[in-house]
Image (tube, rainbow, N blue to C red; front, side, top):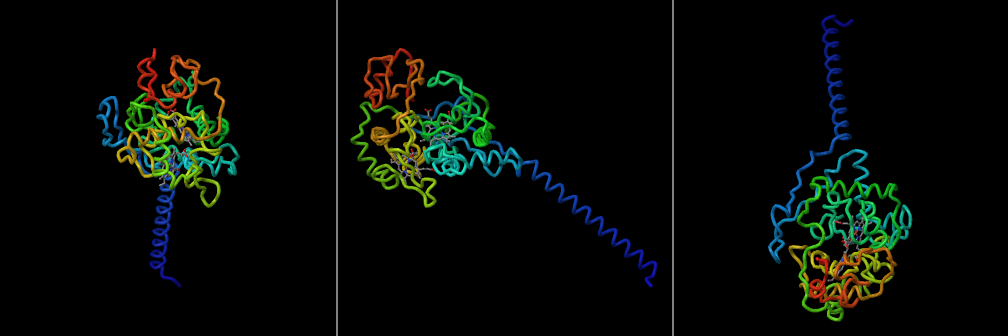
Length: 351
Ligand code: HEC
Ligand code: HEC
């Protein structure tokens, strides 16, 4: 028989145990709930270097730090967070989902968005997405219409990825847009942020030269992109380790990179792979000349009869007429651009 005092003590310790268990359970519930509904860390402020308040960077100097993109570890652990993460995955590995053998469907040519929008659209002056949420919807002169983010993404799918766009209401489009909005969440509407878009590159006082560019390509690009510019696939056969620069699997002639100025500015800040805007590896001349060479090679054609409804708004280096001036298509494509800009009734800078 147990002594009544003994029994009392046993009862008390059972009660203590139960209370401890309840407390532990409570703790577990709190942790689970906060992980599910709140981000892993409070959103860190993004360091934004603002062109408007700091003035343009001094000529030739890009040593000011660009804005910092938010850390992907801060993507919230919510349903929206899952969508944002899927968007990031689609940007980084587009071909796996949307390429010729894509898991979702065959929409695009095998390039990844990230091939051109480096580090999932976050690298400074490598075509990043930070300003998109703050600047769209916007009136674009190329289409003459107000475009939302979906239309801009669809444009790159049809042109840069030479394919067809996923529908606006598809899971994939919604995810990409959610990711782009998340990246730009802390950038005030309408603000220009140092490091977005492309870096400025002064015009040459001569035409960009495809023949000189061929030698630049052989010396600086061919080791990765291949002697025929065809690139190199990864072992899985879905994505490129080194994306093609021309030929049937490259961007078409309606794409942004087909403009010599865009290509030159991109490679100045991003190529050979490892280059950055503050540690470029090409001289300005090399950037312009290699752009002229690559954009003289064969690539898919996209008829774009509706582009530039107001021809006076065409950028100086738009390679297809008609133009609001008397300069040839060749000069528009390769330069020299300054005389065109000077003669223009409206400022249509390539910069
Ligand atoms: C072959 C290179 C290339 C690929 C691949 C590419 N893009 Fe682009 N993208 C560009 C260039 C170049 C521009 C800027 C063009 C211009 O302003 O004329 C651009 C612009 C954009 C913009 C607007 C940026 C801004 O600040 O206004 C968005 C958004 C965008 N791309 C999304 C995407 C998405 C999403 C994908 C993948 C589905 C993609 N792009 C694939 C080259 C590419
Ligand atoms: C060390 C290897 C390497 C070298 C050298 C190199 N690239 Fe690239 N390039 C890459 C990689 C890798 C990518 C894709 C980046 C990514 O997906 O993150 C790329 C992407 C590109 C893109 C955008 C995607 C496309 O296919 O249109 C262009 C344009 C480009 N490179 C041009 C050049 C030019 C021009 C040179 C020479 C001046 C050059 N690259 C030298 C590795 C290289």
